[in-house]
Length: 68
Image (cartoon, rainbow, N blue to C red):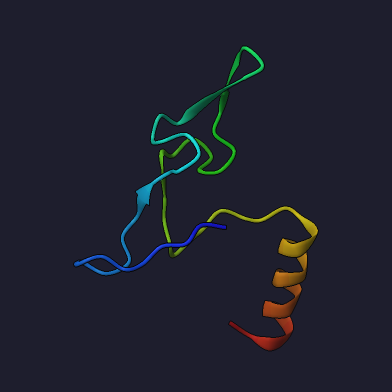
């Protein structure tokens, strides 16, 4: 989960903090697509990356039943 604030133009996409906009990461000597931005190089606050942990699952269930 990444913290971000709206800029002068509102909620704009920002450079992926995991791959720093390179779209790829080197993991154990292999080049792989960034798992955070899915190779886009940026993160859109309107469509943030999914949290695949248990905490992310519980957040999704909360949103389904409580809204938001």
